[in-house]
Image (cartoon, rainbow, N blue to C red; front, side):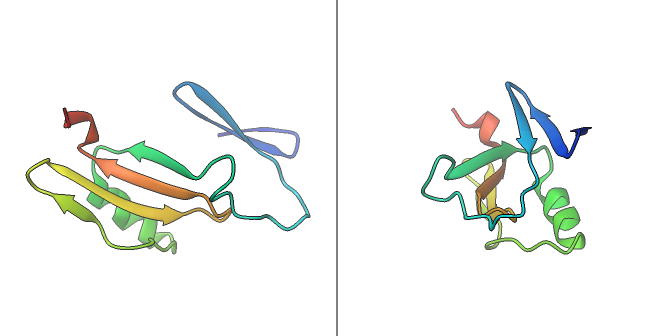
Length: 93
């Protein structure tokens, strides 16, 4: 993350995300331009542990499909965007 004036700028492969502070009420993005973001992590259990230790809440529990070696969990960011975090998706063929 970096700063440009009042904006916070983050990057993910292939995209630059700019977070602009506003005094207006923020409406959830679900059902609008961005309904769901997905991220793959190397250690989902560690991610969940650190996320919860930060005081944040998950939308549910980790769902695992042992046969597919895939685990996913969903959360909602403060702006109302649904985020799915997975481990093992890159191995699914």
